[in-house]
Image (cartoon, rainbow, N blue to C red; front, side):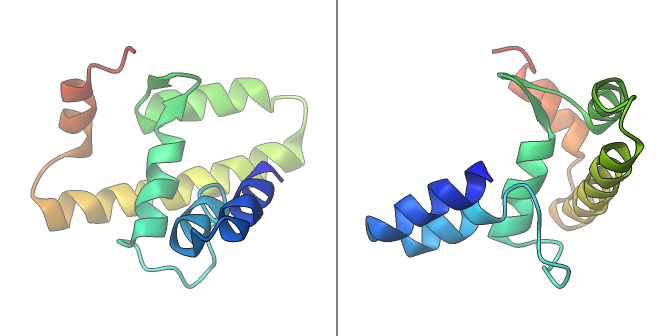
Length: 110
C-alpha cells in the first residue's frame, strides 16, 4: 500500500500529523467522522482522476470501466465511492455550498 509506505516515511521524518492524513486518504476507518481532515482528504482523493478533478458521477463511470472484469474490486471501489458521496453530502450541508460548484470553480482541467 503506497499510503502506508508514504505515511511511515513521514512519521520517520517527524511529521506524524501529516502521516495520519496520508495513511487514510484511500481507506477511512469505519468510525471516522464525516467532516474531519482525514475524511476531506479521502473525498479529495476520490474527486481526482490522474491529474484532473472529476465529479463523483464521472468517477463512478471510471471505476466501473477500470474494474469491469473484477467484481470483488468493483464492489470495494463502489463502497469507497459511496462513502465519499456521504462525505460530499455532509460537506454541502455544513458549508452551504455545493461541491459541484467548487469543482467547476476549480476548472477540473489542470
